[in-house]
Length: 110
Length: 86
Image (tube, rainbow over all chains, first blue to last red; front, side):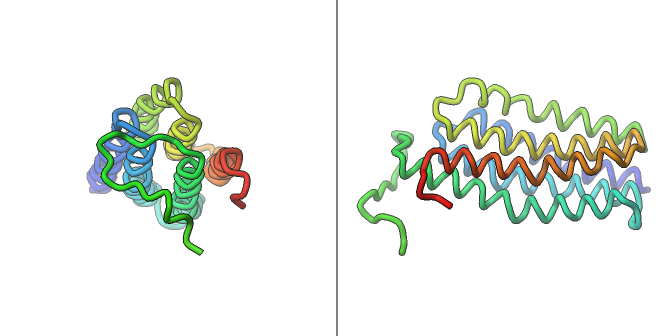
């Protein structure tokens, strides 16, 4: 029973991680790659960490580390991606020619 | 169960292979930083599952340090691009 739950959670997490990796590989410009990166990497990591907790038991060293890693992912991954996106936008990284919005005159929000 | 842990650890590394392509050919620094960020997340998960396979809890702290300091590396790359950040 636990093997089935662990296998299902790992399958879900690996599917989302694979879709995020293929998105980073195939997307046309930097901003769409960040779009593919943030959500799917986080969503792919959380079920896998839950599978680790289910597979090793609740009161083990694995559970505490899994919770800490999940917290760090949830807090730091959007912050780091936002920093990279903001820095790249302000230094003039070109957008894909199919992009519909580009507002350089608006400036950063104060 | 331990075999399943090893399978997941290897699969996480295999999932991260397209990120290596992007890290190699990425035209700008931001592309490589994004790929590095995602790759370090996958490496952390792979290391956690390898720890569960090998029953060596010392690797858990290595995974913890990887997960906390890889984001610091990404922030440093963003800071390099735009000095008024941070």
